[in-house]
Image (cartoon, rainbow, N blue to C red; front, top):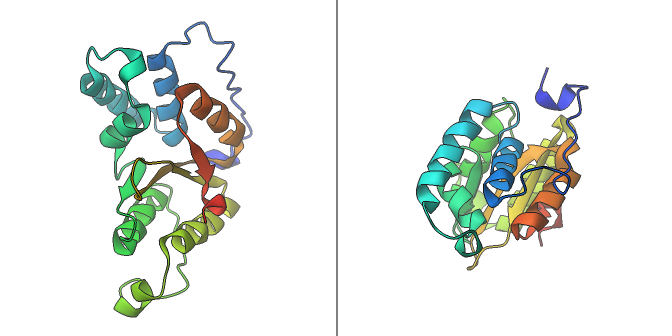
Length: 177
């Protein structure tokens, strides 16, 4: 059974929480991008706290800080045209839940990477993960790079609400293009 098969639905209501601090929101984000893996979320939260130190909340770039502490484990961030890195990163994320992505070609071949657009790869990964109950998210970056994470599909609205609270501009992988 995968976490997405669990009938227990945790209600995420970020406006009603007693603790609406930035750290509380970041903790919720880490729980969402590490479904069923509280230990990893806790490790990343401790690393996040170390990374931001005493930085005032309004000066913290949450997406960058979370990406820094969770990269290649729970998040990805690759260059705009780095299709090999993108494939590797997305496969790594999917492998956490024993999922494989069918890229519709041999990703070890140069011809595959010469003929594919990074946005196509994200959409392909999204389409492969969705039937298993996972949503691939892409977040806005300051450059042309690609960055994002995965959550359980049942947490889509919670992720949208939380991203708004954190000022992180997200869209689902199938909306990239």
